[in-house]
Length: 170
Image 1 (tube, rainbow, N blue to C red):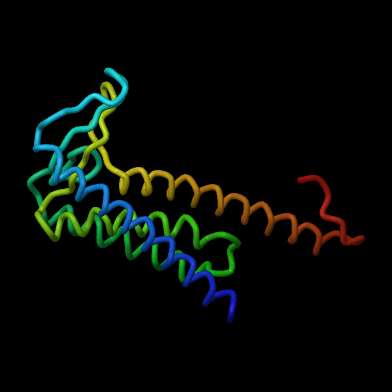
Image 2: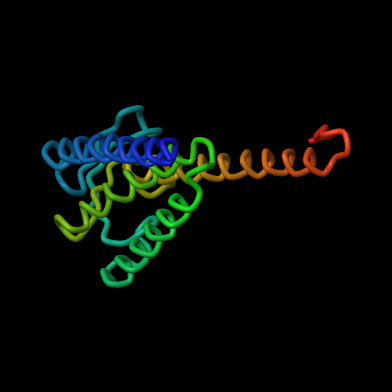
């Protein structure tokens, strides 16, 4: 039981860290860069902009707050359901916390102003923010954690079925 509690606590702390960092950067952007303004950081390679995005995933479903809200709620519930039913998976708390912190960062923006503050601009790519980065990294980490755990379980299953207890080749 202690491991389950530890996983929940670590996921929560990770989510809070990502959320606080995301919101702090967004406050700086809203306070120092006007909506629509662009500032070059590395020439034309990286820029800072101030965009208010009321859609999801690069502005999709913009102007449809109900659908956006439904998508976000379903995704968060699915993440939490997976997490709470897989607390025994090593490191599952890390991608869950990163994903949750990023998602909540964007949810807070939507609740505050009806739109998400985006500010990182790369060439030929829509503007995005730290919460979006956290969500993307969280998904990649979650895939990795799930894959590593599946391989571990398969090795254990093969070892249990083997007459000499050896797992055999991976």
